[in-house]
Length: 279
Image (cartoon, rainbow, N blue to C red; front, side, top):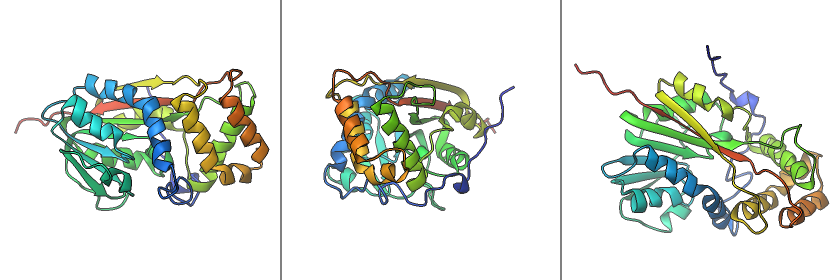
């Protein structure tokens, strides 16, 4: 028997700031480029899974925490879905590239009253890891899935655990996770429980997979992490685990042939809303 998932409350995540405010501010020069580097590293994997699950003509989709909209636009252009509602608290990057079939909504998915309708696909990537009360949010997103539709969630899994070899990279990556937790409440320790969270939300035919993009000098994922560290320096140094020199050394290591490390993986999990029983 599977253990029941443990819901973490806001008190379990000490950071009181918010993504996009305390760190990763959208008005900071180059923030859209940093997000797009993450897209270059992960979008192909995400799109392969969404298309494998059936996303295509006739589907109406919700992309929660859509960022710059790379997945929303690829769903329209490549999968040929009928429409995508892209939601984010700050939509400046989404509004910068209007696309037929793409609607944009500035909203907080965790706020009371967020009820944009029901969709054949509800997708959220690298969103819930930054928010408290994950089980409640998984259930809320599941409620937005139309009968017969699918909820797809992706978040990071940390591979720089205590057992991993200590390198300039692992020291700084550990400081990053702690700094983000202290600042905005980011917590990836629960992400491996996604399959149980989806079942607890009433979804069925649950599946999950993991993707780990290779860390190579100059690669999109290596550049993404370098940019992420640069934007979260203050939070990282405040942990006492690293100083500015250690961060700079890790950036040089990340961009060198000597780099031998595992990037954080991306767990993707999905579950289907049962069809309604006939009256």
